[in-house]
Image (cartoon, rainbow, N blue to C red; front, top):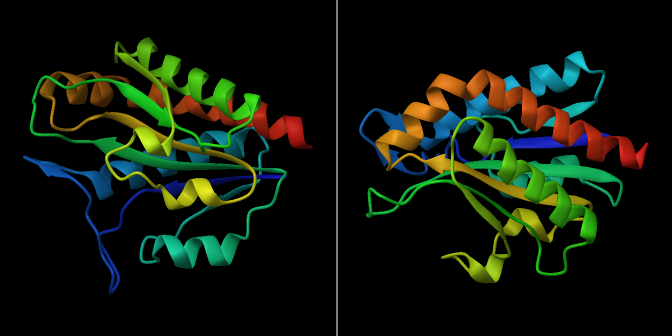
Length: 182
């Protein structure tokens, strides 16, 4: 089938939303860079990848891609909170998630540990600050990955130093779950 990969925010277009901003870090830039790295590794592995466009909203992206039940959908984000000690990787799955979604999310959380990010575990939208995460309402194997806390200097140092390795690992995980549908 395909892996649908999106950067959680955008700096361009009429509905721009940079996401969290802390110091030199802008979530939209970080997610777009990681999206492109992961997509490159997936493409090298022969996986069909469909990404969001930098100027489109989430609603526009979802309408364009129309993911189906045989799709892997992964939305990338970076966390930020007022507590500079908050750290780690977490992955959200739908409240109605399948075993495969929970397994993929657990693997994505564990991938962060390879670059020394704390594993915060698998969560559902009801455990988020928002209560609802729109990308998780789509068909398919749906994942919303919060990579690290851009409000934590140590998290960002670890991420920046290991992002290439991390992108390869995330790509390998997404490919494995995409292979389940082909």
